[in-house]
Image 1 (cartoon, rainbow, N blue to C red):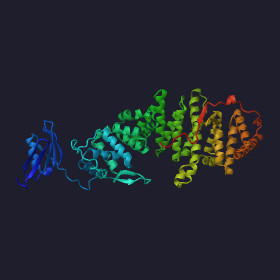
Image 2: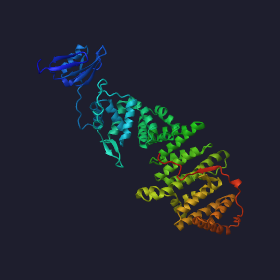
Image 3: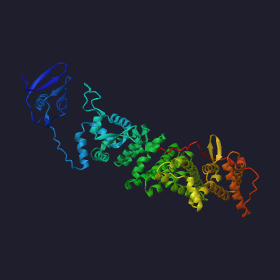
Image 4: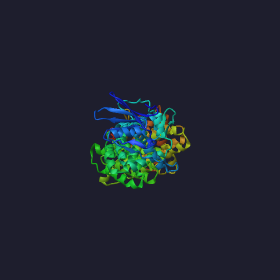
Amino acid sequence: MDTDSQHVRLRNDQQETNAETEPDQTEENLRPDNQVEAGISYVSESEIKISGRDNITYNIQVTSSASLRKIIQSLGGEIRPRQVVKPLSSNAPLHQQVEHWFNHDLANDRERFFVITLSIFHGLRYPHFKNIYETLVQMREVIDETEDKDTPTSRFIQSDKLLIEKARAETLSGKTGREEILRFKDDQYTIAIFDLMRRNSRNELLDLLPVLKLVVEKFQNWEVRYLATLAIAKISRLDFDWVRGKVFEPWATDHRAYVRAAVGYPLAYLAEDDEFRSTIENLLTDWTNNRGGGSEAQRYRWTVASVYKQIGSIEADWAMEAACRGLKTIASFEDLDLYLTNAVIHSLVVLSLQGRLTDILLVLKSWIEDDNSKDKKQDQTTRNCCVTAILAFMVLSEVHIELDPEARKVANELEAQVKNLFDIVRRSETEKGEIWQLTVAVGVKALEYRIVKVFDSQVSDAFFDLITRWAHYASNNSRSLDIISNLITQVYVKASRFRQQKLWNRLGHWEVHRTDKILSQLASSAKTQINAIAEGKTSVSLHHTEEASPQKEKSNIKLHDEKKPRIKLQD
């Protein structure tokens, strides 16, 4: 046989044949049709696979297109010219470059889904990305089109490095330097790829929902859940009601708090869009008011409180107003319990940590001032809202005092955002401003509603505990101690006669305290001020000789406390 001849080898366990062929100059333009009767599948430019009627699979190595033509035609198939893809100009718009690369340069669906996954989870730590990508490939049943099951290739041949290069991505060191993150070399690819999917592959986008939903429910990492929910938000633009039924509604009543909290990310993202804002507002109103009673209704409202936390974080005037209005509605329910109260307080605390502490305090002031209605029907709702405001004030004071030393160590811009509540009260006291008025009202209402704290099985009045904390915080500043003394005096003057008695008794107890000299000094100062006021007002009696009756002091409202605030701030 001529050594210059081109050869085709047809191999199986039974036979091997050689066939002389003629060279063909059009080899690059030919590809076997994958739909021919003989069961022909294309492997590469030099190999095809044929499944015969005897269930024997033949691997055929082809050294020229002429050989390929003869074999296919002898088996009853046909050769169709492969469409020639014209190279794209480097000056083409980015979306055209990305589309050409995605459709023609990526070899198979595994590579394409790698790119799609990266467009959603851009900048994620590589181990997290790997787990998500493998989950997506498994759930979408992506088949490796280049793998021959009869002769499997080594898993080391397709290296991670090669896959990352094909995706036009790169790995970089993370913030700590102890981990790697994966990202596109060009950040614009994240938007371009999603837009490409939205234009050409809407079905694939919708089919990603179950995968993304599972990622949110399965992964505890906050960043993973956040990125997955943003992708869901973008997909919901195709059909919001459909995504609501498939994702948002199930999440809103999920028994896991972190899953319910995840609803806030996509809904807040959509609320930033004027086109969707009314839709989101109507949804939250429906979840708040139209879900009846029971545990499921409480979970809906808990979720709404969490969503308003995210909406309030949007840097727009309407957002903070809408968030506080929605939180007030939840705090005003007649059947309000600590489960929902804590949800509302959690949202208020998180918003206060974003440089909005003064705004939150003014909102609490308005809630307390509303507690003046004489309408019996409104009495319970306004009282619940007032109590929530008092509890929120107490928690805010603790959170911001504990954060204050740390805030002093960081950059000035952050220091300006994380303010100490007591410092704000101290400045407001000078001119008897709104924050000072709020603080006095909190003290009066806390005594009136007998709000107590439970700590290590010990019960104490919330207002007295607040005074104790502030006194120790300001122990090295005589001016600050004077302000706390003024606060005690103002609360005394505005309190009912029975609450005055209780407050006077507590001051007497503090005054003779043997170990806490700060409280002793503070109590003496406050009693002196109260006596001075009383001397000019004969209606104020200072003959407090009896302790308040324990029977009358049983509290029905409790503020639970621990060594650290119960509210978790990571979400």
